[in-house]
Length: 272
Image 1 (cartoon, rainbow, N blue to C red):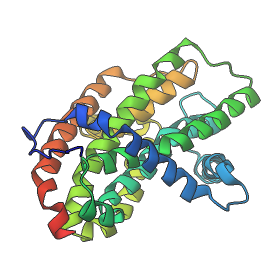
Image 2: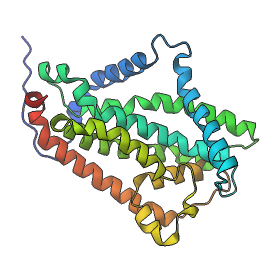
Image 3: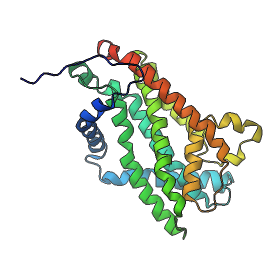
Image 4: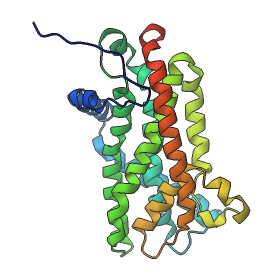
């Protein structure tokens, strides 16, 4: 008979990558389950992944550009906005799902052993499917405006990776806290909604008063969203020193989130 030996983790910062690799099929199954559940019996199916950002872009363009006269630093506002909505929708969806991933799979946690970090990790991965379809719609929008993507687009995987780490780090914090304090599940949607207005999704960073940009740059999405626009919109300029605080905050949140998650995970099965 095969034996499975379950051993305590060796440290709070130990990701146990070998265990994550061993359970890679479970990650794939959870991601595929999430995608299937979301679009099953939907008339548009995966087309909703394109419809949501395109519809949001049209409404926000009418309200914030044509009525509110919000500038876009020289780029067509629709493209400027969509280039910000792309990473924003990914982060918003991934954080919403990862923050509630442990509670959502409570029966799985209480009955079967597996590395618990797999749940927020899989919840952070599944919205990447939506991102890819939304990105296809963005390419169509660029062709509509007669704009050809440049070589800077090669930096997109790095910027998407930064968005992934930002979401994963916050997902580790919120999912673990949500097990003990269910208030987190109520606060999280409010936080995500407010975070959009505190990030340069609808407006350029140049509209933020210069005296406040140092504090504003602590928002990790400043680097991600401005980086996406720099990579996708020819001629779009960014203030690269603004990126440094954002990257530092992401690393700080990731290390802190990992330590907090690992310190709490032994109690999940008892509390949940």
